[in-house]
Length: 310
Ligand code: HSE
Image (cartoon, rainbow, N blue to C red):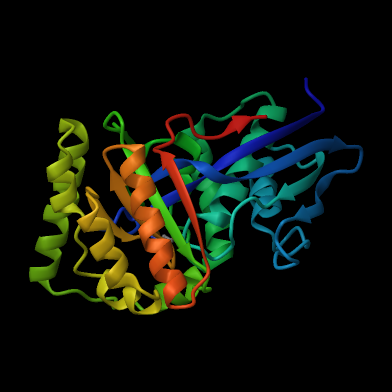
């Protein structure tokens, strides 16, 4: 059995515009890394966190990585095991790119590998959801499921949990821009109305079904037509500087579709190739620069493999 391991887990784009809490996909970069090793003392300890500017808790009950690893060890009846963890944040926190989810998933995959792959990736999803609950008050799975499984994922149901991997059309790229303003998921969730009009629900579930069909049919136009959100985006987009202009730039430059990544402030466009993705992020960053907002851009194919041992 191995004594130590280092795992990378990818960032994710949750919601994919129309599928609030039920759709998400993973990208190749950015992502987080977790190093984990066995120790002689039972318990889970966070030894070090880098790249977080001191923002994340070292207290193992409060940190999403250690807390979910602890849940895992309890589940497999191995609370006698001791591990120490180093978390290397390689992506912005509070960006809408599934930052807590990437860390938590890297930690869970690390402990599961160290223990001899006792659970499948799908079986790890509920443990990762515990981490999300700690991070934002609600254990949504639309970041952790694609971070664990790679590709596009549908959370068909939460009770009971039913997670379904969807196909990724060949050549599809994600163009992501992160305007550097802080939008914590917890706050962004509180903004949303808890009741919706039937008319809006009809529009939304038509789009979710359309997007899923588009992925199966390799139909980029259908995917694009379906990337519309009448429920959440109208409220959340107000928090994102330059949102409407960035949409215009994405559309004019040939995006399949555009919207908020997770709870924002990152935005993303799906494209048919890498070149289009680069043109879109460049034009959007230029716009943000004009309105005095710093930004970061990530261009990546949809990630097919999920987490990896490095
Ligand atoms: N579905 C979640 C939300 C994703 O929109 O709040 C958070 O990244």
